[in-house]
Every structure is written in structure tokens, then in C-alpha cells.
Length: 128
Image 1 (tube, rainbow, N blue to C red):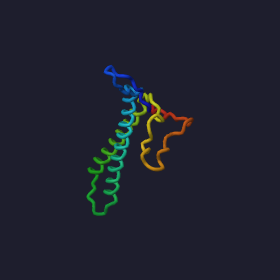
Image 2: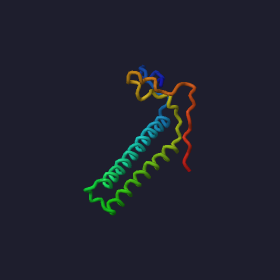
Image 3: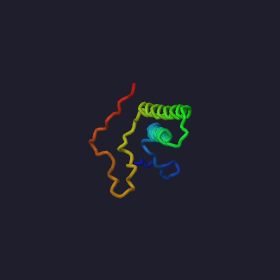
Image 4: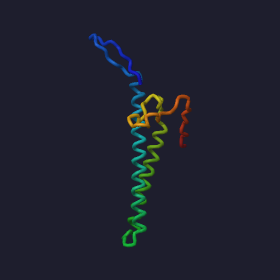
């Protein structure tokens, strides 16, 4: 993203990013929401793995009450991930991801990971 340099009132210069404001806020919102989606899915997986381990352990005292509680927790984590995904789908994304430097630009051989010019961006279908 190229900064615009303006002459400040004190004779110096100040750079102003042309895409600050709401567009910047939306970029941050999208990043935060996808992080929350990943964390909620990770927690769902952790709880499900604990359920799996408890069911298959031969010396475990994994009773029906504990199973019900853990299943409820796994469902709540999954529903939270679903909610964050829906929120992510409703964010009016008014920026082009190709304007951002790729997250791996600092890694040798991976700096060309940004979408190629002319590559169509596919819109994610909304969930009713």
C-alpha cells in the first residue's frame, strides 16, 4: 500500500494512508473474526478428543453424566465457531486482499503467495 505524502502545516511532511478509516477497521475485523473461528474450532476438537480418549480408555470412569456435559461443551464450541463464521460472512469487506502484503512475505521462497493479478476472487456463499 502506497502512502500519500502531504506537506504539514509546520513545513514538515506527514504520510496519510489512503485506505485508513472504515476500510482499515473492516480489515482488522475480518482478521479478528477468522482468528476466533479457528480458536473455536480448535477448542471443539480438543473437547472431542477428550471425549474420544475417555470413551476408549479401559480404566476410565467416563460416565454418562460426564459424557453429556462434554458433549454439550463440544456443541457450544461448534456453535460458537458457526456464529463467528456467519459474522465473518456478514462483514462488508470493502478492501482488496491483494493490497495487503502476503503474511509470509518475509519467508524465503514464500513471498509470492499473494493472489496473481487477474485471478478472480470467489465470493463465499452466505448461509441462510
